[in-house]
Structure formats: structure tokens, C-alpha cells
Image 1 (tube, rainbow, N blue to C red):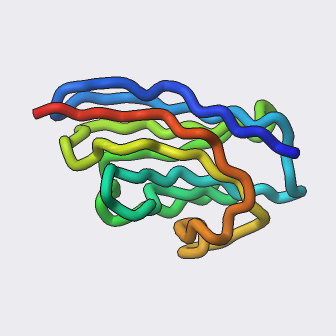
Image 2 (image 1 turned 30 degrees about the vertical axis):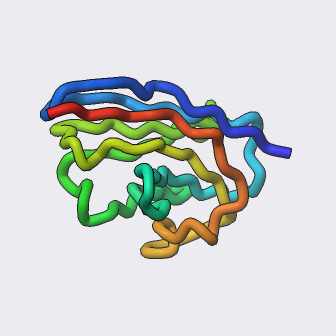
Image 3 (image 1 turned 120 degrees about the vertical axis):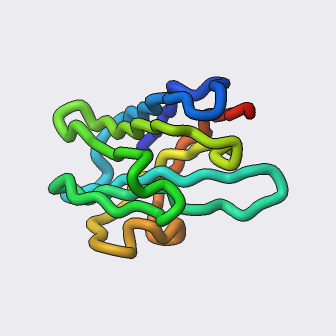
Amino acid sequence: QVVLVESGGGSVQDGGSLRLSCTASGAPYPDTSMGWFRQAPGKDREAVAGIDYDGIPNYADSVKGRFTISRDNAKNSLYLQMNSLKPEDTAMYYCAAGPRLDGWLLLVATQYTYWGQGTQVTVSS
């Protein structure tokens, strides 16, 4: 069983920055893909960004140019640098891990097997 633990959430002002981290207790697959998803109250879970084992990212249109996803395979860790945050970015952010994925599949929640408990991000105007 793989456990994912997120950290780095918090409250910031409009235009601020945060860096989320996710650490996995192990590598569930030989070529594990990882992603960030978010869910705001009353809304469906939506993709933020995904990254394949080789470090190739894919971003949701809403965060392109503002967020950067990265990973450290040696540490089984995933990161999300969030800049120019907006109130509409307010949500619970979840880390996910799954089998090898490419392209747009990195942004499909049902492709992921393991999920963290989430970390709250709140952006005030």
C-alpha cells in the first residue's frame, strides 16, 4: 500500500505564491505518473497538472503560465509551485499517483490509483 502525504497549503492574498509538496511512501509502479487535482466546495474534482516519470508535464488551461509541476524520483516526491494565485484557485489540493500515463491522460483523475488526503489552499482578494 502506497501512502501519499501532501503539505504546503495555507492562506495567501490574491497574487501570492505557495509551494505544495507530496511525498509517497514508495513507488507503486516502475514508471509512476503523478498529478495534482483540486476540489472546491460544491464543485467536482478537477485536474491541475500531471507529470510523467520522465518529467514531462501537462497542465490544465486554468493554471498554465502560473503553476509549475515537478518531481524528484529519488525522493518519491512531487511538487507544485503556484504563482499569481487567484481567489478561484481556492480548493483542497490532492496529490495522486498512477501507472505510466502520457499526454492528456495525466489530467484524468480516474487514471490514478493512489490519492493523498489533501491540503487546503485559500486565496483571499
